[in-house]
Length: 201
Image 1 (cartoon, one colour):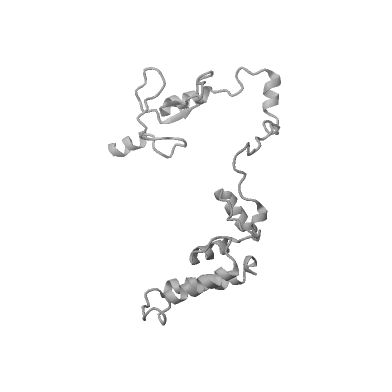
Image 2: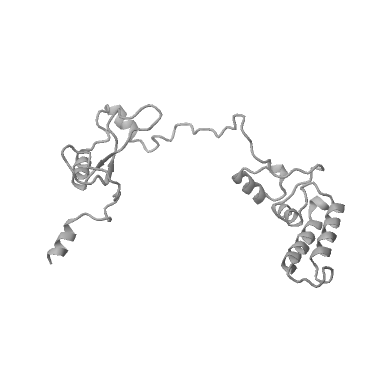
């Protein structure tokens, strides 16, 4: 019974915002309890290239802090009114994502499929360029990789490479070795896809 009562008296992880095991001590003077609850920094603290550091309190002292905390403390009546408007803070102009001389990322025109363009922009990958200017889809690029061809390969190079790989991988052509059949199926699928692609039309 005493054990259950002891457990009930101790604060547990159900308290919102509690961070256990940090090794911090409560920032309240003369308190040696663990500092497990975060509170805003002191006014004017911080500076330089780092933001002000939060204060950390034990449960009792963070409750006392919250009870006396007043966000509007030190504001004039006009400042309080301005801060309570429904649109307060939304008037600020958002920061533009300027390229400022950096890599602008792939162009939408480099892709026939918008989803491929979005994926490449997210990964910041520049689409492989073709000398003829024809766009490549993500599937086109994957198939070219299977066949070991460059992005600007033409239809003749495609047929030649396909014939080489079939001779190398097909059991009827390589002395009955069937260990490469899985790769052969990938090669056939890649060739069938590419020969119908706009870039190889």
